[in-house]
Image: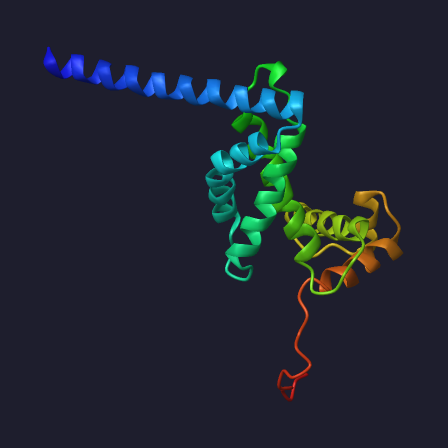
Length: 182
């Protein structure tokens, strides 16, 4: 039927376009790797910048300017281009997406805190929070600091320090009005 033939024609055209893009992408990577051709690298950036922008939009939250996230995603794209090995036979986008997403997650982890807190303490604060939630469900009550410490295999002091660090995630303004209860 005509409709089936038209669909096959569109599918073949789409497949041809995809094949042409893949071949062009491989040529650009070869030029960049073999000759350190910066024009090839620039062409790859231009080709995959929409992917980085889409990922930045996916990670966008109201408090962080989208332009900043696009910059972070662009850095991730550059790192992906520099690290990608076309000889492995995988598609670049399959390699780039986790690399760019990792940059965006790292950005939120490192820049999301109101006060600069060491990464290991940030991670402990998250572990304490998860353990607290889990223990509330298991025990049917709020766990003690000692129970959290035992669950995580850390000291009571480390749990207390993690609680203090978690308070640094969001800071109150010094100009905030003080209520009678504060």
